[in-house]
Length: 446
Image (tube, helix red, strand yellow):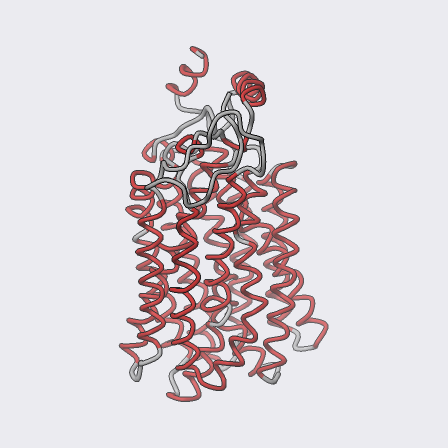
């Protein structure tokens, strides 16, 4: 029987170091330390970049007079390039483990902030945006999600939700970052890069690819618990512990494409809000910078509540059905703020969108892992997030171009909201695929 005592997080060299001694007392499962580390790294993305991008957009508009289309283009091009890197990135994570990949990404992320602090032209702005997008993705979202999938099964939705709650808490801090941006955006960007080096890089030492490499079992199960669960999943043959699609097998299923396209349609709203909502609130709503930051802070508080709720809901109920409800909430929230400039509409938007975003986001990865297993998850989810990038780049472009054409965000936000609502159909069709024949045969043989 393997002990579940928690070794020193820094014990051992490389991905497999630090196997706990036998006979130790069972303590906190090491996977939860990895959850905390992932949450800390995601905090740096939510607070310094994604939650503050609207503040940077407003500052650059004031200082250089760049159009919404130009600002949206930088966001979209950078996300597109980051998306194209996801498949090779996923394969690297599966083969090399998360540490090397994450460290390289966080260095790029910090360098992006340093370059941003010195920009004085649109091409340099695009270059800094690309570094920030690629670095934050390589150092954060994809490797952290892959590690969560490898360490958790029964508590997967909960673990993924908690690992990204740091991102949401970063959004709560983002209004303070935005206020700092309005005072001196160059100094704020420089300080952000230093924070990534000081906080993010040390946290990567806690990341280990799989529990088996540390002498542990998935979910921190004891030998008896693992045997009982193996008997249950062998009968059902639907657990990610027994099912293992290759990337090639996954992309040949309808479920893969329905999840990817549905996820992408939800990010039409998320990305448009990240880039344009601050400008919309300070422009159409005529809020002060502090007032707009307060609305976005409320949205983030709702996102945190959604992530906590989503983790528990996802481990207890149909993830797919929960996501369908969230898609409707995304649509209603954006329509409210597009057609009504009252304070109650802004509050309702913040609550509905925040809850939908927080609840739905972690369930995307968990649903992929449930359907396709963890053996090639990095590569599979890398391909999926490449498809999802279409939503990330499409939302800001639609909103920005239609704003420059009509002088208002109303039409752009309406189009995006309706597309997100239609996207719920993808999740209706995303039923569980039949496992590969070899997985069925392996389960039967065991």
